[in-house]
Length: 482
Image (tube, rainbow, N blue to C red; front, side):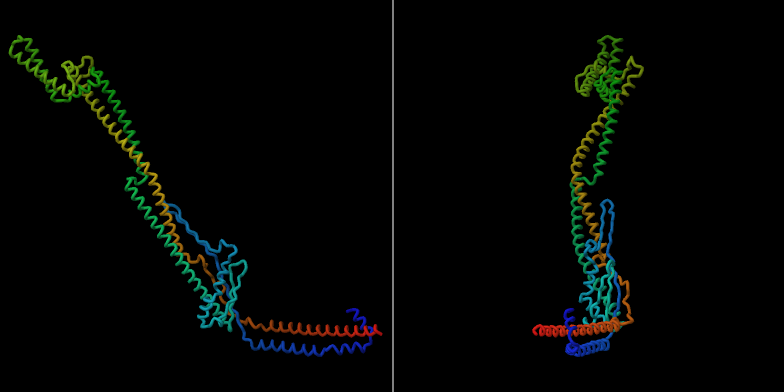
């Protein structure tokens, strides 16, 4: 370009004028004037004919949903229920995007348009903008008048609320159906568990663990009682042995003496024999053996002796003699003891009775202990099954109570999947139209006109330089040819 300029500078001015005249600057000037006139005419027509549009702005807040419930069930367990927003665990999921999608759907816009008796095309679509790092969403609606724009925003908000309530109700119904199904199933399992437990209690006779505890306590009490009775029995045995020694009788002989002492027939026969023997002794001291009365008394004595021996053998179950019966007699005094023999015999009878009673009691208690231990062993074997059935019942009760709690809480929580929305900024009533903006339109038109004019000048300048360059090259060639 510099070389072309230098070359052209070496030629006469007549050549340069010729090139300039042939630059066609008039064509570019006419094109520029025509373009600017059309451009500004379109601008003024747009400002004149375009109806004003007003924008009503509002803002909606979407707080997250979070609720929980904890319940302690006495003697059963612990039930808890927690309802967390389904978007909380998804860091990439924004619930506002869900709400934005719902808000831009045709059913909501159609419902809002119906409120204003407008068609869907007349109602238009809102401009929804999510505000970063907040739970806010701005809503803008355009209208032919300020009131129309505001009415569109209000109708849109009502339609959105109605749609969300419908979705919440549908979700609640579906959730209740699931909860009811789970509740019915858990209720049936609970009834079955109760029935199995009741049947087992009736069949086994084991109703609770307290039975085993009470049975163990009773056995221990009987063992202590048996120990006490055995001690008393040993004391009675010792006393019986001591009395037998004082009476010069063995334990067996003391028992025989007690048997004879308590038999009234034997005592009557003994009295008859004693009386007859005494009469014989008296009569023998006075009369000869052939004396009739003495013979008669001897016959009575012999008869009484036979009856006495027969009764003694019947009571003792063995052969006895008068010497045996005399040794077993408790009616005379023991010369070596200051205590009367009959008093010792009474004590012996009491000691014998105590020993017999204590022995019988100890045997009875031992029999009871054996029976209770046998029952305890059986109940202990049944306890594991009872515990298992009780655990199943408690688990069924806990599951049923938990499902019932979830059902009750689920009915009160209707904002799980669709959190509550709040209209934090009421729809505004715009004072100035949002479009067309005269200043922006004029500024845009001015810049457009400037850019078009500058472009045409640059095109003319470029064409002019190219023409001068071509003429210069042609003259240089002619020179070189000459």
